[in-house]
Image 1 (cartoon, rainbow, N blue to C red):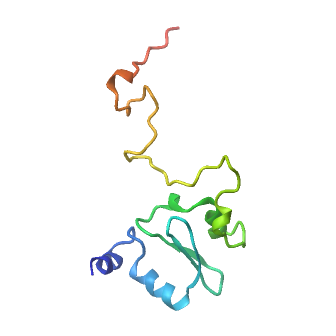
Image 2: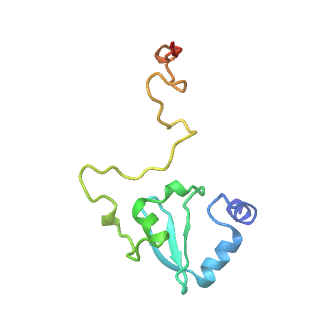
Image 3: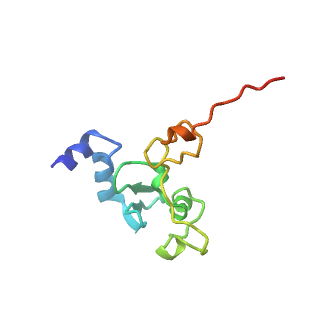
Length: 123
């Protein structure tokens, strides 16, 4: 029941009620990525994504990004995710979260002793 209320009143939680109805009436399921996002298109080749959880555009893997932005018409498969051994799996943007990258010496560093003080430039 709570998910239904969220769909009616919020756009940032998965999909709106209008998108839900449009997907049922006009949408053709195309595929699902490894993060659980579902991809659809209609007869005029309009493409959209229904996110598994919160709406965050960086949660779309690169191969599906190419498809949804009409850079390719080939529908991605699970084998397309990692092409080379050195490639890492896709992760969303963690900026502003606890998982964000904080280099040694930055103000966001958890260790207070590692923080560097800036030296003024002297002409």
